[in-house]
Amino acid sequence: MSVAEPIHIADNAALAEHCEQWAQVPLLALDTEFVRETTFYPIPGLLQLGVQGAQYLIDPLSIDAWAPLQSLFAAALPKVLHACGEDLEVFERLLGQLPKPLFDTQVGAALAGWGYGLGYQALVAQLLEIHVDKEHTRSNWVARPLSAEQCRYAALDVAYLPQMFERISERLTSLGRLAWWREEGERVIAQARTATEPEAYYRKLSAGFRLRGPQVAALRDLCAWRERGARQLDVPRGRILKDAECLEIARRLPMDINALKRVPDVDARRVEKRADAILEVVAAAVASAPDTWPEGVEPPLPREWGGRLSRLRDLVADRAQALDMPAELLARKRDCEYLLRTGELPEVLTGWRMSVVGSALLDLSDTFP
Image 1 (cartoon, one colour):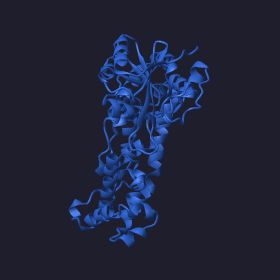
Image 2 (cartoon, one colour; image 1 turned 90 degrees about the vertical axis):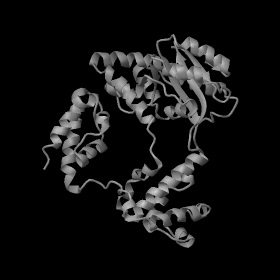
Image 3 (cartoon, helix red, strand yellow; image 1 turned 90 degrees about the horizontal axis):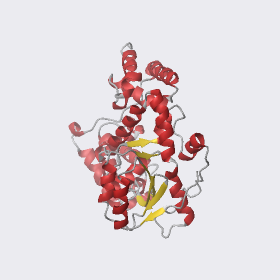
Image 4 (cartoon, one colour; image 1 turned 30 degrees about the vertical axis):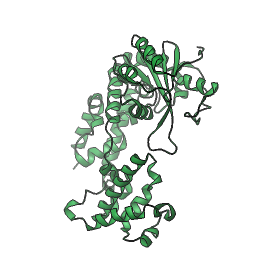
C-alpha cells in the first residue's frame, strides 16, 4: 500500500469543512505528536487523522475553534488509536473531549493473542508485513515549519490503523471477543477522566510504607504541594521535588534550612529557593493532630502470603494460556495483591474478565485460611 502526501489543515474554516465530511465515514484513525520535556502538560504539536486512505495533519498552533472536532469525537463512528494513553492527555488538554468509542490496536492485538504491548511499528510489520520508519520519534513537533520528512512520519502513524482495525476486528469476532475490545476502550476513557487528587498522590510512592504518623502526613502534604505547584507552573514534578526527596524529607522532618540541606538525596541548591514553603509544609505536618494523619502507604504483602499470591497468579496464567492471551491482560500482580488484601476484586477484574478469571480468583481466595 502506497501512502499519498498528507493533507494539511491549518485554519478553522478548513477544519470545520473537513469535520462535516468526516462525520459520514465508517471510522477515524487518530494520533498526536507533542513535546513534554520541560512541562507538566503535553504541548500539542500535531493531530493526525486517517480517513478512507487519506491522511490529514491538523495544526493546533494555528487553529483555535475546536467545536467541529469535539462533535466528531462524540459521534458514534469508531476512533482507532495505538497505545493511546498520552494521546488522550493531549486531546483532553486541547479539546476537553476524548474520542469515543475508542479502539486501541495495541489492546486489540493482545486480545487476539498476537502479543502484549506491541509497538505500532512491530504490529504493522506483523499484521501487514510493512516496515514503518520511526526515525523522527524525537522531533521537535512545535517548531515551524515542519519538514517533509516529519510530515510523512506523522502521516504514517495513522496510515495503517484502519487496516489493522479490520484485521483485529475479524479475529476478535471469530473468537467472540469483539465486545471485550469495546469495553476496554470504555475503561480507558473512564480512567483518563479520573485524575489523581493531589492529596492522594503520596500513595504512589511505594517506599513510603516505612513512614509513620506525622511522617506520613508530611509525605502526603509534600506530594500535594508539589502536585499543585507542578500543575500551576506547568513544569515536571521533579523540577520542584523528586520522589526520593519527598520521601527523605518526610522521613527526617527537618525544621530549619540547615537540616533540610543535610537530608540525603536532596539537591540543596535546587531546593533552597523553595525551602521556606517546604519547611512550612513539614512544620504543619509535625504540629498536626494525630486524628488528622492519613493512612500509611500500603506495605508489601506479608512474606508468608507468597504462596497464596503464586496460586492466584498461576490460575491467571492457566486461563490466559487456554485463551492464547497474555496473562498481563487478564490480571496483573497488583490485581491479585489487591484481592488478597481486601477480599474483593479490583474494578479491572469486573466486566468481561469476571467470567473469564474474576470469579475463579474469588473462589480460590475464599479457600485461603
